[in-house]
Each structure stands twice: as C-alpha cells, then as structure tokens.
Amino acid sequence: MKKCSKNIVKAGAVASLLIIQILQVKAQDGNAGIQQANTQVRGYFESGTNLMYAIGAIVGLIGAVKVYQKWNSGDQDTSKVAAAWFGSCIFLVVVATIIKSFFGI
Image (cartoon, rainbow, N blue to C red; front, side, top):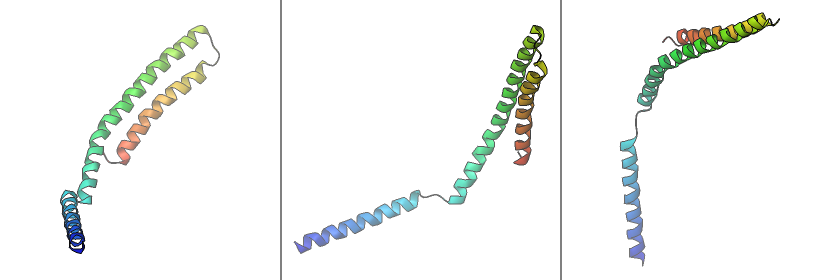
C-alpha cells in the first residue's frame, strides 16, 4: 500500500509540473496585451466619433422639424424648444471634438 500511495503522489507532482509549464507557455507579456488593447480602442475611436457626428446631425434634423412645426402652429415657446434641440446637437458635436483632441487621436 505504501508503494502505491508514493506512486500516486509522484504522478500528481509530475502532473502538477506539466500543468504549470503549459500555463507558463500560454501566458502573455502584460505590456504587450495592454498595448494591443490600446491599439484596438484607438482604432474604434474614429468610428465612434463619426457615429456621434451622425447622431448629432439626426438630432439636428429632428429638432429643425419640431421647431418648424411649433413655429407654424404659433406656439409661444418656440425659442425654448429651438434652444433645447439645437443645444443638444451642438453638445454632441463639441463633446466628440473635445474627446478626440483630449486623447490626441
């Protein structure tokens, strides 16, 4: 019995060493992973900025239609609605531009 349990312990130790070696082979350099993530995020950033510009354009068009409808119906709060819609459009464009220049992209 003692000989059998020693063999089991040896087999377990060998298996543990093999697993540790396999994990070390598959491990990556941390800096390389961070650099790859940085490159990917910067690659998506231009598309995200263009998407924000497109959303700003759509919000501006919807706002123009809403303001035109209020103006034609003679509502008194037309200027308030115009300021809200076009302010949100300008906010989207300015935020996209500031983020782009802040990160140097």
